[in-house]
Image (cartoon, rainbow, N blue to C red; front, side):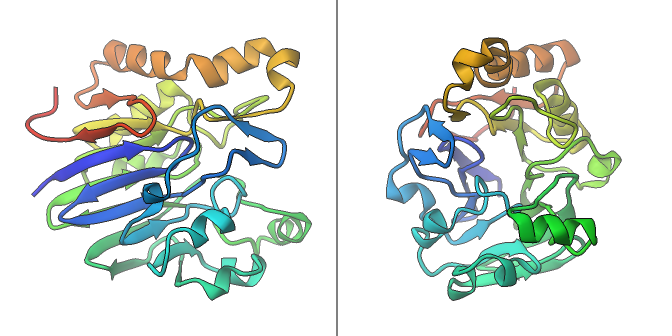
Length: 264
């Protein structure tokens, strides 16, 4: 058994098909999100039709309640403590998890991993973070049979990437929405190293080229170019330079990529 296909719907939203199951990561559908404007088309509703939904952290561009409501009554894996902090979340089919948890949901074996990222959402969660009571940002390794996927969520570089068991597909973030990237995100070069660390056969780039703050393109064109325009090109260049064993993927919006046969 292997991972069958992956579809990128913009930002960190993907649909991953494996073992007859569809797993959706961090669903985000709107044309605008506060000060962010979407550069890609709005995804169709079927973009978030899955059997399991993974939510990596509480930032509004990853835990977006209106998008989660579009997912229907399916299990939503969220950071432990999120339901008490996000009004309306508890009304959904929420399964709260923390790093170190292992569980099987809708036939998917999930290992919950730690991520290095500020997952605060508002003034309340900022106060919790200062007291070290904030729900943690998460990554995930999930599998059906011997078909396995790694989605680290938003994270900086971590030495324990190398501790993740090998996977067929790595879903790696490579950019951001500015004006800076910071140490709690991966850039394209770091994403290539992360995909190599987990022994992936394919590596799909996410978290780029979708949302950008209003007016910031005009005010900071160099940052826009570096963080929004060039990440996919740099991802492929870094993969070539590193001799990455995995096949790097930067599909078009909504393009379903079958993962069949040996990786190049």
